[in-house]
Structures are given as structure tokens and as C-alpha cells.
Image 1 (cartoon, rainbow, N blue to C red):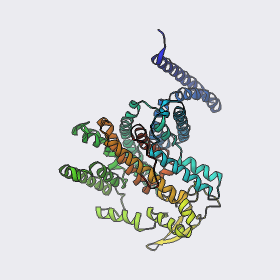
Image 2 (spheres, rainbow, N blue to C red):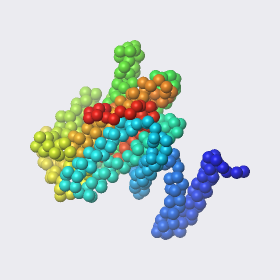
Image 3 (cartoon, rainbow, N blue to C red):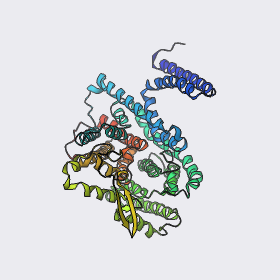
Image 4 (cartoon, one colour):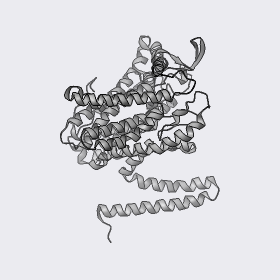
Length: 514
């Protein structure tokens, strides 16, 4: 049998990779039994490099590794095997290699010489990159702080370049929504284990630990700290939006929609992330907003269904409130949420979400125009150094109770606040523009008649995802440092960028264009 041509090479490559993996497994297992950690590490590294070399030679393997690693592996290791959670550092070189592959293909292939434009979302991404550099250079540039901040923001942004510019076969990109669905269902066994086993362990830990936060699936949590339960719910809501869109377009039946979507709502109901209410409202606005005029009866039916779902979520939030809390009714839930997020500047020993924005406005605004517009540089809210002014502890009271706030650890408590401090209004505007451009491009792609309905459903889900990601910026600061969340952002934006490059005529963005 002769191994010639692409098929033959694939067989040989697959055989070689399997043989290398088998040899590595046997060797590493034998070395592990020797009892010498040093010998184990030194000998295992070449084997790991061999496997990495095989993977690096195949962009498609790198793509799956990047997406699966960011959305699944990093969060699981953080919770279940924290000793090796630094494995997340591998995702950055993978994203860089993918970006190099894309740029290499861009310079050497007919793909680059065609009339295919640079996607608008890429211009916004580059604008944000430029804003971060300008912010750091104009604010007493400190290399250590800049490196920490830059590494935090741009860990997997190479994935965006790869998705947008590498000449992936259409079938590869069309499989991405199915990958998202598979990862969504992968959450369920981990959610059950976290709910039934790990939550009881955390009850009574104190120190501000909320037991239910650990129900975060594969998106990361800590036994002693917080968890990305809100990020999990954002991801699941995006997948559910795709399923609903598929039903709207006749891709799946109502029965199949229920069979697929119902299990995915379970984590949303049990992990008590109140922001999920806004996620669901965003999905309804995107998928059914036009029906108010075009199909009023379908809008009414969808409104009743969404109202029922929201009622179930709110009741679950009330019933799941910790014993001894002030939340006993729906009115209590609304009042407590408003007071702790909007009305009060401080909650416990931390700034509230909108309190953090008010604090930024007090210390910037017209009193410091340069910092207001350009920020204080990357890493400003994350790295303690003598150049950072707001390290003092502020003493105040809430209802007569003394409160102490370590502002250095708290001023970037949401992504919006962190972006304002670090990149100013200019950087925040670029991030908003990136998501708005993604929303608009997905909408334009949806209107093109030649796309199959499965792809159109994915575009509708991408529009909902853009709005959900916008909401997350006001809720958590994971945009600044969390690799799982950033992988989700690059997944959504990169998917739209790929199709925009193939099908939307070139249109360089003007200032303010989204």
C-alpha cells in the first residue's frame, strides 16, 4: 500500500502521532514509578514537546485545543486539580501559533490577494490594542505593571486573528456551533457534582464565600473563593439562543428544542446568578424583537413563554437565597439587588458595582482630563506599586456600621470600571465598538439569503451573544484576566469575523461606526 496524496499523509501523520503518544505514555508512566520528580519532569518534557510538535503542525488541532482548553480544561484544573492550573499558560502560545499560521497564509496565498476585506471587528480590536499601548505610554510607563496587564487582557486574542484570516474550510467553521452545544452538555455532570458534593463542603466557610458560586461547570471556581457561575450562565444562554433560533428557522422541531434546551436551563436555575435574568431578556429582545411588528401573535406567545421562564428563575433565586438573608420574597430580592448594586456605594468591605463607577468619576472626570480619556495604563487596577494612588483604606459607614475598603484591590471590580481606570473612555469605547460591530455584522450576515438555515441560526445566536457579553462587562471584571471568558469572547467575535471576511464587502469603520 502506498501512502501518497493528502489521504495517505493523513494516515501516516495519524499513525505517527498515535505512536508518539503511546511511547510518551509508557515512558512517562515508567518514570513516574521511579519516585524522582526531577527525573520525571526532565524526561517528560521532550515527550511533551514531541506531542506538541505533532499538534502544532496541524492548525485544526490547534484550533480545537485552544477552544476546548479555554472553555473546559482551564476551569476544571482550577477547581479539581489546582496544582496544575497553570496549564492555562499553554493557551497563549497556542493562540500565538495560530495567529502566525493565519498571517503566514495571508501573505502567501490567493486568499490574501482576493478582494476579501479586513473585518470591521478586527479594526475595532486593533483600535483597542492601540488604546492600551497609548494609555500605558502616557502614564509613567512601568514595564512590570504593563506586562501583567497586557498578559491579562490578550491571553487568547491570537485566536481572533486565526479565525478571521486563516483559510479554514467552511465545514470547520460550521462545526463550531455544534462544538459549543457539546461543551454545553458537558457542563451538566460537573454542575451536578458541584451542587451535590462541593456546595455542602463550602457551607459555613465564611469570609464572604458564597457556597453556590462554585456551581460554575467547567468555567472555573475555587473551594475557598468565588466561581464563574455567571460566565457559565452566559455561555449556556448563548447556546440556548442558538437552539431557539434553530427552531425559528425550522432546523429542529419544538420537541427537540425542549429536549435540548430544558437540561441546559438547570444550571441557570440552581447557581443563583441573578444577572441571568438580564441574559434571558437580551435573548428575547434579539430573537423576538422584530415579531412585535411583523408577527404580533408569535410575539405574544413568545412573551408569555419568556415571562414564565423568568418567573421560574426569579422564584429559584428567592428559594435559593441563603438562610438568614433578607431575601424572603420577590420584592425582597428586587430591593436587595437594587440596594447592593446601584443605591449603595459600598457593600460589606467592597465597592458596589455602580459605586465603583461613581468612585472613578469622583477621582477623574474634569479634574483629570488626560486620565479620563486615556486611562492610567494596563495593570493599574491589578498590580500594587508606589505609583498607584488609591491604595489607602477608606473608612465609612453603612446604616451606622463601620466599613473598610481596600480601594487598591477593589477599584476595578467590573470590566467597565477596570477599563475606565486602565484605558480610559477611549479604551472602553473600543470594547463597546467591538461588541457592537459583532452584533451588526452578524445581523447583516443573517439577512443574506444564500446561507443555510443552520448558519443563520448561529448568526442570530451571535447577535444575542454580543448583547450578553456587553451585559457581563457591567457585572464582572473577567474581561481583564479570565482566560475562559476571553476564549468565549474570541469564539463569538472570531466566528462572525470569518463569515464577514467571506461575504461582507469591505467597509472601513469611521469614528463612531458600529
